Length: 552
Image (cartoon, rainbow, N blue to C red; front, side, top):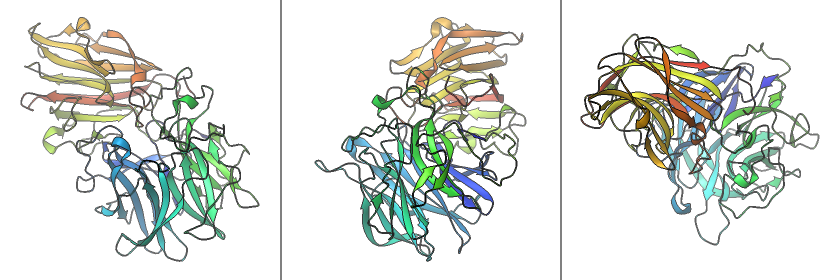
C-alpha cells in the first residue's frame, strides 16, 4: 500500500504528471527561494527530490513579500510534440482588501532537472493558472478571473484562453467557464483534462482549509458549457454539504473535524498510469487531535480512483473521504519505502547544498554563505523579523517527533550580533536558540528569543553565560506540540534551557491563518555592520519516534 502523505511537511498544491514511466510532482513554495519544489517517482510511492524550477533571481522576485505570498500553485505539463516541460505559476504580491495583485508566468525546460528558461509573462487576472495540451495540437490556459467589486459574487470565474506554444503567450478571447460546481465557494486550482469525448474541469472549492474539496465538471467543448458532477464532490474530508458561496473565509475553522484522517483535503491534480489507472494527488493536513493547528503545514497525499460507466471520476474505495493509504498501481516497481528527503547528519557537501535547503525570500548572497569542507560559514545580515535580507538556511520540518542539532563557532562582540538554530514559520512565528554577546554579563551567552502573537519575548531569565571562544552545540527537540531547547559545551553534557515551548505557534492556524509550513534553520544576524561570521559544522535531523501517518 502507498502511505499518505506521500510528501510530508510543507508541500501544498501538488501538480502531478506522468511522462513515460516516470511520475513528477511540483509543489508551491510561496516566499521561500528557490521556487517550485520538484519530485519524481517510478511507482507513486517512493519520491525523490530533483531540485527546483525557479532557482535564479532573474526568474523569481520575492523581495519584501509578506508571509504566504510568492509562488502559488505551480502546474506542471508536458508537450509531446515539442518534447518540452512547461511550468506555469503565480507570483502573488499582495492580498489587501480583497485585491489580489499578482503576475502569472510560464517557464519551460527540455529536461525536468533543467535548466528552466527565463519566465514569460502571461496575465494578472487571477491566481492558479494551469496549462492544458489538447490532442489537436492546441494549448489552453485556465485560471481564475478574480472579482474585487462589491456586490458581485466572489471570488469570481474560472476562465480559459488559448495559449500559443510558439510565442509562450496568450492569444484570442477569454471565455468564462464557471463560478463553481458546488456552493462551497472559494473556487481555485482549476485543471483541464480530456478523456474520450469530454473535457473535464477539476477545481478546488470550499477554501484551502477545513471545508476543502475536489470538484469535477465536464463539457464536450473546451470552452464550455460545463455541467457539474451530480455527486457534487469527488474528494474531501468535510463531507457536509454547505452553502458559503458568498463568504470569503478560505480557512473555515468552524468546519474543523477532530476525527478527520487527512484534513483540508482538496486542490487535486489527476494522473493516469500507463495502463490507464487514475490517481488524484491532493493537498492535506494533519492537525493535532484536540485542536486545529497543523505544525507541518499542508502536505501532499495520493488517492486511487476509478471512472464510472457514465464517465465520472470516483475514489476507488467508493467513498469521498481521503484515506491514509491507497492501492498502488497494478504493475509498478517494488516499493522500497524511500523518503523524499535526506535525514541524519548533514556535514555539507563542499560542492553543492542538498536540495532540502531554502532561504527566505531572497537567495543567500555569495558573500553570505560559504561551504567550508566540512561545514558551512554564514555571514550575518538582517534579523528574523526582517522583510528584506536575512541569512537563514532552512529545511522543512516533516515529522511530529524529531530532533535538530548543530555545532557552531561564533564570536559576537556586540549585542546586535548573534547566531544559532531556529524553528521558523514566519517573522511573526518563530523560536531562536542563539549565541550572542551580553553587555550585562560582559561575555557570550546562550538564550532563546521568540516571536508570537504576544510580540517579541527574550527568555533572559534562562540565559547561560559561556566562555569566549568555546564551540557550542545547540538543539531543538519536537514532541508533538511541545518543543524543547538544549545546549552542550566542551564537556559533552547536554542541558535543557528555557521552558517547554508551544510548537503550535509554528502553524498555519496560529494568529494570521496563513498557509505555508514550519522550517528548522541555521541563522546568523549582524545588525551593526553585517560582518559577523558563524561556522556551522553540521545540521542533524533525527526522527525520534517511529514516524506514523497519523495525528499526535
